[in-house]
Image: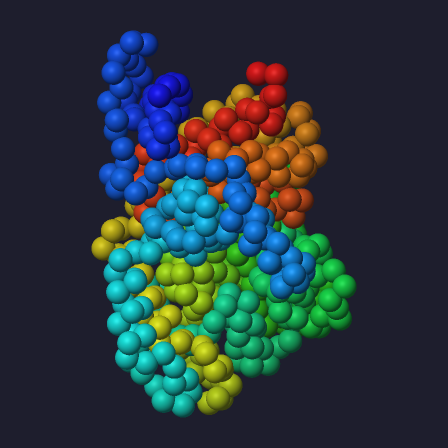
Length: 489
């Protein structure tokens, strides 16, 4: 058995390397034990929430499954983490070789209440034992109604609302556009640089990035127009949110005409586009302009929604009340479920049968959603997200201060990103971002990249992640950044 000491902010992490894996103990810096001291084994509050590697990554069973995958699954479906998962719990992924990995991606912000949350599992099991499908369009059931009631209550604004349920974020966004066009009688849809809204034909038109999402798949749905977003790291120095909004509005008025715009669709914090947080004032200015012009403001809260950013919805940070909101990801607690929630007069203006789908609002997914929302409320997951930010952000800022290759640190709540650049420039460095996440993976931590340029490391841990486990993951991330950005350190 060996021991190494690591500093993570105000904590000292004691890595105890034993035959059965690694456990970390924590104590404040003024209580650092002498080299000969016995280190107390302070484990996470749940002993199952520990990182542990028992094989090389990927291990032999994952490699065997990869060979099967190569012969069965098209290469058009890519995988960023070459480990096959057998089980998961809380913020730990367990692969088929028995390795336990810290999940800082949460299935792209889906598993916000943690993997295999007991009450979600129970709700899913109970519903599956009763019935799994009727199609709400044929035989309705209470679960669909209950989810819509919860959505109407928790989304921004105290006005009368109605909701409809679907399967994926892209499907929700498509239906936002359908509602906006039907209600306003206008055709144009305005989206923003760096936006990501999905992979269907319409949502590919809405999405900004060519590779891998759009390349060779056109022609796309017409009457989609793109405006410049607020991207503080890459905007001209000193550009305010109001100025960025005026830039976008001016382009829309010149090139599209406000009277032709059905809706302005925006992510309050851009997700796949790079975790870009707009400058303060950008969203309120756009909302005010939309209201003046009779344009519907539609918020894509697919990734930001349900406590991820420290509030129930990211729009709330600047008191934005959208006309229409698209949600998905964390809503279903790991099952596919999405929704459109909007003003009652808008949603009810669509003719009967105009919205729907065979599987939309599946009863098992609805049961999972209701249990997940209960957990979010009972455990105050907005506060949990803010705790993750207060724990992680000082450490990320310290890394940025130590490495000129980190151009920007940004985010809100448990949606945090580091933009990597060539040192001393704003030139994107996607290679470094890729190598950092690969280095993290070798140590048993799953992190993701994103961004128009592929150079942003994004952190999306489950909101229920154990504090000690979060510190461990940040320690691994910091070591990986040191190794990649300063190999001679």
